[in-house]
Amino acid sequence: MSNRVIVITGASSGIGAATAEVLAARGARLALVARREAELRAVAARCGAQSLVCVADVSDRLQVRRARDEAIAHFGQVDVWINNAGRGITRPPSELTDDDVREMMQVNVMSALYGMQEILPHFRERGGGHLINVSSMLARVPHAPMRAAYSAAKHFLNALTANFRTEVRQSHPGIHVSLVSPGVVHTDFGRHAMHGGPDSRSFPNAQSAHEVGVIIAGVVEGMRPDTYTPAWGAQRVREYYEAIATTGAPPEAGR
Image (cartoon, rainbow, N blue to C red):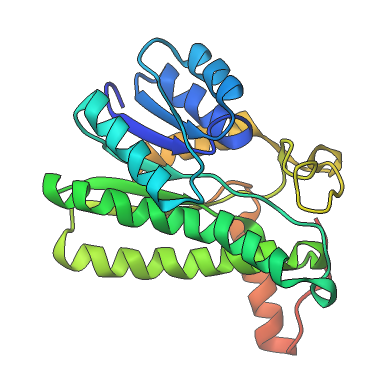
């Protein structure tokens, strides 16, 4: 991990900030990307003098490109790119508007696609690199109707990630692509969701952002392709799809 250059989007709070602190403690050099400059600089201060602040809205491709260029100009290279930026929503599928769906796709899918496409030429030129997309358990087990558009966007991201991995490794096996799927996390995710909603910290069995950051750091080090951050994640996914295969219906929602 020492001296590895890592770009993290959505780094001003929550999972992104926690991951940055864990990686910095392990010797990584960080380019921290987010819209909120004051919060981003506070995270950078906790991560040490080697951290670069890149104020950018990653739902805009040109700003993603600028953040990439700033990181390469500052450090000379990028070894790992983590697409972590995202946003939730609180609205059942029967009430979703066009704007709701557009926002979920722009923030949760297009921002990641821009990162994937913009860093790929650099990774190809270097013959290696590691791309990590942060998804959600709700992309695999969509049992929360109020998060329907978010679940759908993250499901799209999962498919996009898998196909991007397949495409890239055929010509550049040194480029690794990983997907990380957290469950409920003690962050401001719920409070910042479109249309408001319950605070994520009010749910039982939520993980801390630090715990998720440690797991993401493990993915950076081990380059595992697919990781669930809750210990029960893989079992919950198996139960969900086994129930559909055997009974034709998913199991009742539960945490």
